[in-house]
Length: 332
Ligand code: SAM
Ligand code: SF4
Image (cartoon, rainbow, N blue to C red):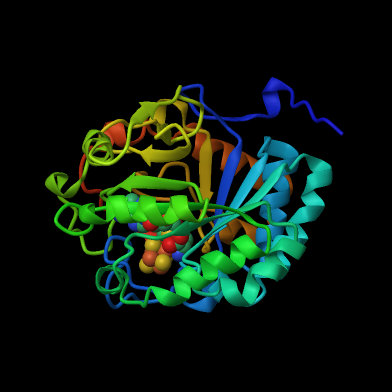
């Protein structure tokens, strides 16, 4: 079945950007403590503040049916820490009949050995996995968690037949020397890899412009080992390069080369706030309206208004942003 949405039903912001992708953070909790993402001692949100799966399904249905969302990515915190996450992904499949085309997950892979087969059976299309270093000591320093279970989780997901992309945040004076080892490991295992510039969204406010390793420098490092050819730009946030003619890597350069002008995403936090942009200083609450018995039409109007007022993006910010959410509550 094909779906065509009339112009009027599309979710659009005031700069004419249409939204087709929704990220739903289903928990702020995490079993890692990546310093670039969350504070060392995070205060977890009370469970009463977190939307139930029924509430999330109702909102997801409105986004797909009424607002033209075609892809949903489940994220967190670590989404697989939330009991029922796999069943939630299975329940989302019903929205395929209404126009949903893709259901994806972003995970730190620690629980994938246990859940990979179930996720595949639940209809998950693909999974993005964070992997910032191949050196176990450095990995543990960055994430406060051991590397080995992560590697086992990645291989379990591959074994289960899930499409995988690896994502590595690169931070100056921390893991630039891991760029080549990460490529070597990912290439050897036939897994696509993307590098992500460090964004000013960490829990501690430790971001500094000089800690960003820009795309050009990442490419220069790769050129020490490989013949690197830039591939034509697509609508994806990453720019892709071919190494030695046979292995593709991506770079997401939000800081040095923002892709905000073509951003087609919108985010929903576990507490039911719409963040139209990662760099929005505050979210627009849906939870209170939802729990006060708002009609579908009222919720849709709130979502439309939140997205309409989306800012230009990183280009408007260009520095550390004080927000009422950190990355682990926003989902990346
Ligand atoms: N726990 C899951 C994971 O680590 O993949 C999902 C949530 S995590 C917040 C989603 C993504 O955000 C990860 O790829 C992570 O590397 C990225 N991220 C977190 N903080 C970041 C920052 N300050 N700059 C760039 N990327 C960041
Ligand atoms: Fe947890 Fe992912 Fe944030 Fe690391 S990046 S602390 S794994 S939510």
